[in-house]
Length: 114
Length: 115
Image (cartoon, each protein chain N blue to C red):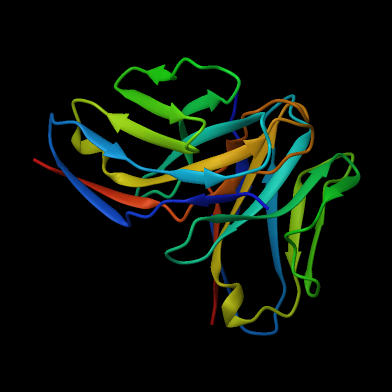
C-alpha cells in the first residue's frame, strides 16, 4: 500500500512564475491537508480538502495561492507569480476520514524561488 | 486559538541514554489528540506516537513513551536507549477531536545523538 505521494520533490522557479505541487493521497483516503514549512519553523496549516470540496482554507494566503482536489487525480496546490518568500517545503497529508485522528504525510516538495 | 510551544530549540543525548523532549500546549477544548512527529534529514514527517486526551494512560511505542499531564497541558516525549538514528527534528502537534480538524505544530526541537 503506497504512502502519500508528492511530486515534484524539488521545484525551482523564478520570481513571477507559477508553481504547481501535486499530492496523491494514500489509497482509500479522501481527505487531504496541505502544510507549509518555512526554514527553521514548524509546519503551518494551509488548506483542507475533500474530493471536489474545500473544507477549510483558513491558512491559505489570500492572494496567489489556490488548491483543488478533483474527483479524479491528485490534489494540486497552485502558487501564481511566486516570490522569494514562497520558498519553503510544502507537505501534503491524508487521512481516511474526517474523524480519523492520524494524518499521514508525504515526503514534501521543496520549492526554491530564485 | 490553540498553540503548541516547544521551548527547547536543541538537545543532545549520549547513545544508549534517555532523553526527554518537552512540549506544552494551550487549548480550551477538553477532547483532543496530541502527537509527536519525527523529521530526519530526509525531511519526511514520521509519526512517532499519539495520545488521546480522554485516556489517562500514557502512550508507549517501543522505546518511545509520553508523559501526558492534562491539567498542566504538558506532553513530553521520552526516548529510551537512544540510537544514532533517533537524531532528527521532533515536532509536537495538537489536533481537536472533531471532524475536519487540522494539526497545529510547535516549532520543533533538534535532537542530536552522540556516539
